[in-house]
Picture (tube, rainbow, N blue to C red):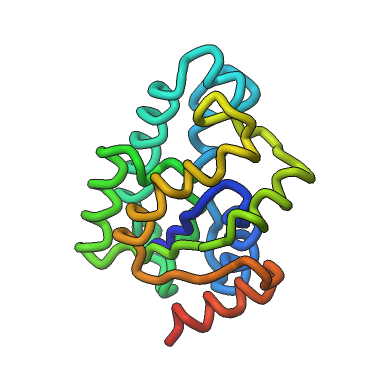
Length: 183
């Protein structure tokens, strides 16, 4: 089974995912890193500038489908095969969403929505926007409200579990998620 973390940029999917994978003694996979490796450009922003958002989303769906298709391929006896941090927009693509729903239905994936307040996300991203292209043409920090409004219903529909990550440090979140998954 794969544990997939989803939520808006800045909610801590990659940081928490690494800590959770260490606790569960399984690999951590960052979907954005895997997708970026399929392009020649060095950053997500450069990929979007050269190829467009649609090319990124197509590659994202392809890579996600391959990762979900290899669940349990190692033959390992651990309860969790991988912890995968999804890109914030991954569940918004129709193909990716179908793959996520199919994996859930097959019992090969558990999806966790890492929920965070807009105020906290803005605080985190104003310190470091990182390699995050604008999704709407607006400032990446200021566009968070409309982006969350569009995405949250999909996150909630797909989620097996929701966890509020607003005020808990990453280690505490990883510990709570590990307990949630083992219970």
